[in-house]
Image 1 (spheres, helix red, strand yellow):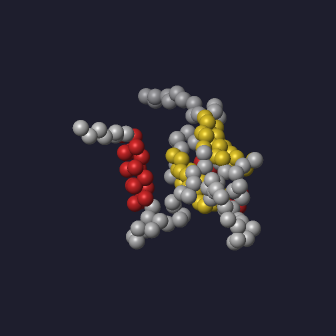
Image 2: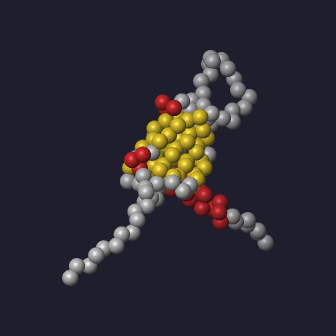
Image 3: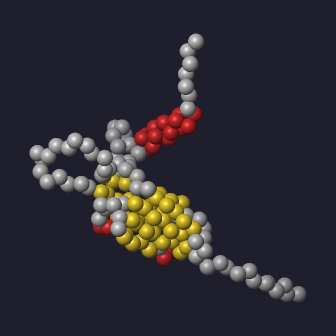
Length: 145
């Protein structure tokens, strides 16, 4: 009897990766570097009473290499991180730090105020502050006779 181990979550991961590969490649099957991630920075999202906070770990990324845009309720964060070697004669025994481009998108709720988003970098952490719209208070409407 042949036993086969099946992991349904692994299958979903493989399908997701394949769909992303197809969606972000050009007609020749090669990836367009502006959309395919070389690495994904870790992100925390926190909701507070008056704002949303997105914190992304991006050590080694120069702020001038980060682009943040907001369009149709979607916040896009993309950038690049490069590691330069001193000379071409260097050989590495191990490379674990990722480099290249990253691209993250976040759908924002209707309560987010896209006009007043602020971003700052501190110690390798990008902090994006998205204020919430002030709650609209219900008002009584008079019925005229």
